[in-house]
Length: 270
View 1 (spheres, rainbow, N blue to C red):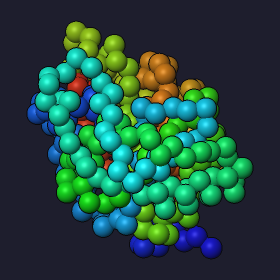
View 2 (view 1 turned 90 degrees about the horizontal axis):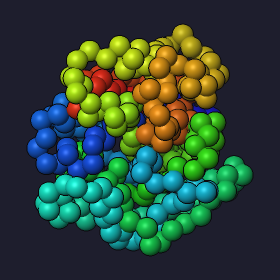
View 3 (view 1 turned 120 degrees about the vertical axis):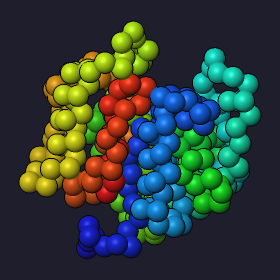
View 4 (view 1 turned 45 degrees about the vertical axis):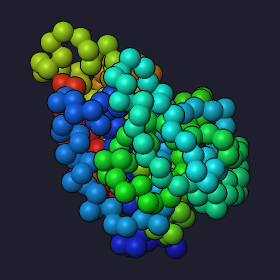
């Protein structure tokens, strides 16, 4: 039987990963995020491996990187040349990828391995800050392009046993992701819509008097949250949180509540 309070379980963390490579380029609008990613590192212990669910990879079925030495994918444009010279030579883990595939298939979730796909910036940007030595093997997991929230919670449930192997799970997305709002005039001003959605999300993820069924129902029905469509015109940056939430029925701990590019964003640790 799984014990949610077992300190030996690998951590589950949902983070905002910022705008492209900007956290690695000294952008002042990302300093709060950089500070957080550095400060949270000791709370994660020394994982045996890291599985990252990135908002920047969608497939028709769950796809898992299975290469031993994945390259980096510079999946952004319009940045200085140094953004395309970033290195993060972290190894992959074909064995862990195989185990993930088996767990997903055992739960009836369509999935496949991809030995050629590299790591996108949803992985290498935050991990270069958190784990700069690039020594802990990593596997990246895609979203399913249906973008169905219940499907992504189910993925987390199917993989829950990974935590028993001291595997860290990182959902790399953004609790607020409206690109027009990020770069609109006056973006530093108070944004009541942003604040209202963040309050709902924090309440949903951390409130300890919600049952696991109530929490799951709220996340599945997230489009009815205050100003959900404004905060997430498209939901790919929120869904890594759903995968994280599927790993455990316990409430999360709010570990970051700050501003990135002038907008409020949150991070959660289980």
